Each structure stands twice: as C-alpha cells, then as structure tokens.
Amino acid sequence: MPLGLLRYGLNGKYPAKRHFRWATEPKKSYDVVIIGGGGHGLACAFYLARDWGINNVAVIEKGYLAGGNTARNTAIIRSNYLTPEGVQFYEHSMKLYQELSNTFDYNILYSERGHFTLAHTDAALRTSRWRAEVNKHLGVDSELIYPDDIARLCPSMNLSENVRYPILGALYHPPGAIARHDAVAWGYARRASDWGVDILQDTEVTAINQSGGRVTGVETTRGTIHCGKAMQAVAGSSSLISKMAGFKLPIRTIPLQACVSLPVKPFLDQIVVSGSLHVYVSQSSRGELVMGGSTDPCPLYSTRSTLDFKEGLIGHIMELFPFLGDMRVARQWAGMTDMTPDFSPVMGKTPVENYYIDSGWGTWGFKATPVCGVTMAHTVATGEPHDLIKPFRLNRFDEFMQVGEKGAASVGH
Amino acid sequence: MKIINCPLNGPRNALEFVCAGEVRTMPDPARCSDHEWADYTFLENNTAGLVKEWWCHVPSSYWFIAERNTVTDEITRTYPAGELFRERVEFAAAGEGEKK
Image (cartoon, rainbow over all chains, first blue to last red; front, top):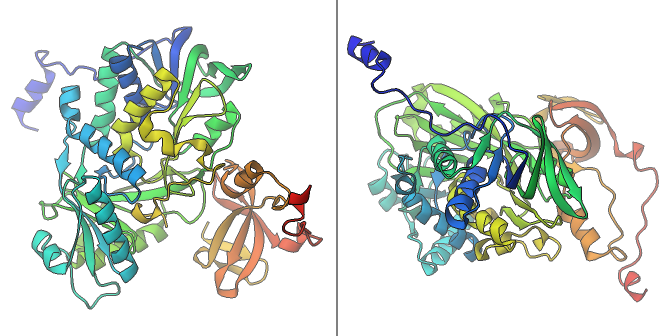
C-alpha cells in the first residue's frame, strides 16, 4: 500500500462518517412500523417522512440493513414489460431512479446501458414485437431489432447461426440501466434517518399483535413495539410474516442464483438477457460480469448455490460469448424470491385493516424499489392504495384478475 | 439434494424429476365458493419445514409423493400416491351444485 494512502487513512482530517444514524434502543411506540429493512422498506420510510410528514417510523430488520435480496439481485433496471399495468408501474420507477442520486445527494452509480432481450424462436420474436408495441404506446423507448443491428450495437456477441439456439432478433430497450444496489438502500437509509426514521437492525419480529382485526404492535427480539399501522416488505419470507398476521399469499419461495466473474476490461456495454437460454449478463462498473440464470426447480428457504445451476448458466454464457471460456467465477450466491402465479407483485391492503403488504417480488424487485416506496408510502399514509398498485392487490386472485407478466420476466419459467 | 429415490425406478438424478407442489385436498368445484376455489388454485401455504409434495419422474411419467424439508433441501421419504389416496374421490357433476 502506498505510504500516502496509509497516512490519509490514519489521519483524523477525513474521518469516515456513518452513512445513517443507528437507533440503539427502540421507542415504545411508533406511528408506523415497517417490517424489513431492505430497499423497499427503507424507500417507504423515506417517502413517508419526506412526502407525508410521518417520521415517527421504525424500520425493523432481522439481519443487517439491505442484506437480503437488495444485496443479491443483479441490479438491472428496465421498464419494457408486457401489460400496460406493469409498464406504467416500472416506467414510473425508472423515472425516479434517473433522479435518485440527486434526491439523495448520494451517488447510486446509475448507468444507462441499453437492454437486449434476445429472441431465439418465432414465439419469442412474437412476444418481443408485442412488448415493443405496448411499450411504445405508453411512451417507453423499446423496439424489435434484428441481428444486423445487434451486431452493430454489441459486436462482442456471437451471432453465428451454427449454435444450438441462434439469435433471431432482440427487444432493444435503450434506457435499460444498472445501478449500485447497496447505494440505493444506503441512500434511502441515510435520508430516512435524517428525517427522523429509526432503523433497527438485528431485531427480529416474532409475532404481530392484533386486537379486533387491527394490528396493535409487534413482538420483537428487543421487546414489544406498539404501532398505529404496520407494513411488511420482506420478499423471500413474505409468507412467514403474513402467517403471523393471519393470512395466506399466492407466493412460493424459490431461490434464484447468480454469480460474478473476476473483473476484466470493459467489453460489454449492454445488458444482455435471454429468456430461452435462462441467462442475463451485464458488466459492472468494476469490470465484473454479473450473471444470473433461472430460478431453482422447486421451492426452498435457502440461499445455497448449486453446481447444476452454474454448469447450465456458464454453458449458455459460452454460447453467447465463446471467448469467455477461460474466465473465472469470483463469487456466487442466491436470493430467495417470492414467485407469484402471474409474475406480478402483491401490494397494498390486506385482510387486516391497518396492515399493508409489499410482496410478491420474484425476480423483478430491485427495479421497482423507488416506485414501491412512493406507492406504499401513499397507501400507508392514506389507507387507500395508490392508483399504480391497484392492479397488484392481493384479492385480484379471488376475482381472477391476474396481471400476467410471465412473458416479460427474464427468467423463472 | 442430487439423487431422488423414486418408488418405481429407484435412486435417480434429481434433474429427471419435477416438483408439482404441495399435496392438498381439492374442494368440490361444483359446490365450493369462488374464494375457496381461488384459495385452492392460487394461495400457498409456502411452509418452511417438512412438506408433502407431488413429484414426477419425467422419463417414466410416474407420479409419487415425497416428504421434503424446504429449509434443508432434504427428501426424507418417497412413496406411491396410493399410500395417501386409498379411495377414489367423487365430485358432484357439473351444474349439480348450482341448483342448491
């Protein structure tokens, strides 16, 4: 280590500051308790405090801040969905993301890359065209392109016809972006705590107290906390917490695995996704290839990694980028996703009067972080769901009014 | 979980099997309410722990029941569906329930 850097690190002139205030002891009572200190819960706390003047709020996190799926996703942001409900929702999120560094005065390393969804079959081409038309109708920049344009935009990709699944075209979404996922959570945590929100880490909710069909408080490993309203944002464990509140969800918890390679010089600007090959890959600002694949074949509450998954994923990456044969995998991990039958989230009101839910975040949660914060803060503050999340209500399943987004999900099918 | 012990074919690679979800009792479609039917169709117990699930050995198209721990990913027991379902389940004929 250079001596100058050591001296800089040890002198007291530039002390590292904590990114957010730690609440050491919980108060006896809060207006709103948010269960889950990931991106979604913190975002909701931030908008509750900033936009609705409700700052007597606690965010309760079992582990450490943003250590669950916020830390485990592949940080892709896009809005090229299939249904009008989905497109409008994710497009609003993208607009918020584009301004988020300014909102926080904190850099989230938002980087617009362009996003390809590759089509290897006629059916996939048809869905891509459908998505492009829905997107364009709603003002989202999205179009179907063919191999000559793909070659021009992304020269490193193998467009040979002599592979198992030749590339026939792609849905191209120029505003597709990646961001530093930890920074998104830290930014929300920092500004929420500036507004007076208490962030309680290492605090597990063990029961939800109710009286007369209303939530009165939560039992935690650090004692009872009373509350006026409560909300859960714990994707991966949504069913376990909702069981405490006394209702079932249309969710199965399924692991989604991912890995990153060693860092190399930049060669891949775009985010490349293939639903048929079950692959998505982008190159981070550090030069690592961030790679994800399909969800696991059956439900599981675990974040273990498997060799089968890596073999399948890397085989498919090799088909797209054959020169990566000597690349090394640096880290691997998994997150627990909330898979819903229609690939849309479950948000808004619940059978319990003053208890709200933000769940059903399968493989699409990170990109929705800001819009979930805004819409859930609105829902918690007013008691009525925000217009953008009405289609994602829990009782849509009773009414057989699903919002089918399977065709726009990158993986998991 | 890499090897699954199929009651018909013996121990086989887990990639040969598909999981079809928890074993649940189907309500009578002609007599149950919309809410009961939606519950059966869409809602999940999503238990963390021991569950009874339908599994299929795809190459031989053989359906059986496995008891699996959804936290440790271990299958503790597999057996033919006949152990759980000893009798044929009869439902009301379509339309019959609506008259009542």
